[in-house]
Image (tube, rainbow, N blue to C red; front, side, top):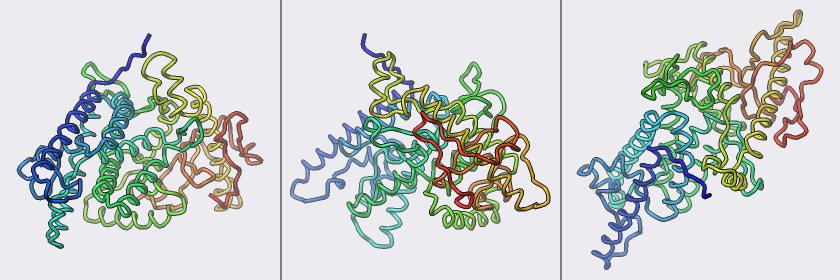
Length: 436
């Protein structure tokens, strides 16, 4: 029996629109080339102004600021965006509901396109280079950037295995890798439009998810679905934005550059707060955001590439190309063991820090394990005030990870806090306290 492919309605509509608009764009560009064969132009300057954004002509076709995202210029872009929407779109639409997913797609399509258009027009005003006004702006790069940001929020500690485990990457590293690749391509190969769209898509999606998206306050839901009413809208307590420490801007980048990025973000954040553009997160906001992150980590995982197509054979085939470390059970077990190890090390760090501040009395944590970030007030770049409680610890390589309370009191855990499960390839490496 062939596998049944179940695609949510909005994702299905986006995929159909992507194919139709991309083929219409290819036909219009070919017709443009047929009309003017005598002029040698770069391929991106054969355009269809009613399907893609052309800075010198798009004012007459305002709908293109939304539709241009689904009009690809070449077959490679069509395939890459199609795969992104098929797998990532199915996951996010089921996690967030169709209404929230549609709002997200509209924002990450419209805002980057408008800003890129304004950048090219401004550059033309300064340089008077006519090529800037005839450049075609289109493609799903902003959607791809926004999706990796979304997965960084939902399943940051999930490990994705590529090529049957030959390459293993944590989801939280995807945004930095994606932006680096597009930036290098823009500099070396002249794909400046894609580089701009990737950065603007990243910033737009992070800003929306960090400060504005309203989601259910979860206790055990991993992906923000929460409890829905009869109309599909989320019911119960709601929370605005994501004030968790792991979703701060500085934590999208390697540990080596956390400090300088945090200082720049602190300065920008102080200015925005001073002019009343932004309001800092309260301690309650940070606590709620951290609890959300822990709840997502406890119950959530990134599905295998084909595991929702129905039938065991499809799921097994999917695990070889893009999986989470051996299927559902293995992925959940490894992530639980990793979080337990992080909790033990975080307890050790907290007790040592308390002993250093108060040599006469050892402070024992009560309730939830907490550890402070390496930059005390760096969270102002996207969140809570200095000294706000947090439930985020740091991996041995400096990256952040979700924690959960230890099973028992901390008095007997100071002697040894390393936890290395035998069957978990992603075990925690033992490090000195100073390396944290």
